[in-house]
Image (cartoon, rainbow, N blue to C red; front, side, top):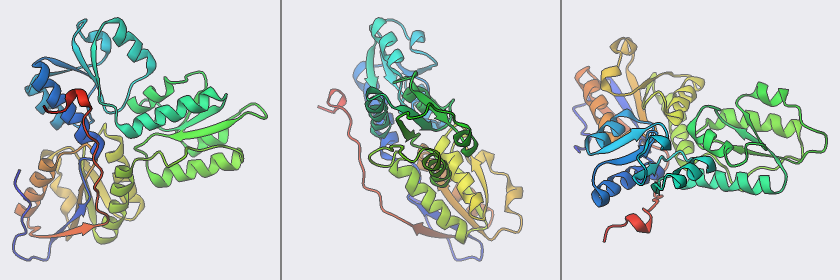
Length: 319
């Protein structure tokens, strides 16, 4: 992969966010599929998209990964990788019944939320899960205690909740949400249920937090913010929303082919970043195209340095 170089000075500029792109959980999940292909050979089945990025999925498919919607689509006894977004106990049970050789690529930070849900459910709490009901991560978490979990998507949902008097109440959050939006919902839940219990530490993952903070800084320095990511990537969509909230125009671009050059009209400064599931090659291609369009100066805006690494499980470690 070629490094992004800085052309000659020009009035039009790109402000490149750092950090951007792949997080530790995404790198681990992709690495697990790659290593499974090395060990077992093709095909290796993957339940759902391993991460929410079509470029990555297509690349793994060319190497022999087969992406399926359900564990029931996997031949009995075959290798099956669970995606980074996690699965419910029901999915695990069905996989065991089909004697699948399961490789669990659930992000450790998502697994943390699952453990918290089980802990709260075991003590009889009603669990308010802040998140998007149809997102795979939320579906997996709800599956840990479906009779005790209520999904709360908006502040209005929080206001409309009706719980039994004296109920023990806890809340958890999807890991890829907007910090600001989640804070508003949490504040409303605390107002409604003053004795509510939250997670021991923030559920929103470090990468989502860092990328959103970087977007806020980009929005202050750029007229337009372009976020590289797929439209089914929750954290990427949230980054666009954050940029708009903080005064910049912003668009999600799956790859350089989705760049609408009309967006650049009267724009001298373009902020560029990428969601946690977007590979750096897509950023490089976008920056190269912007350079062709006259944005010859590149400034890097670093808001934090990331050093978190999630290692592969021992069963997949290189000999």
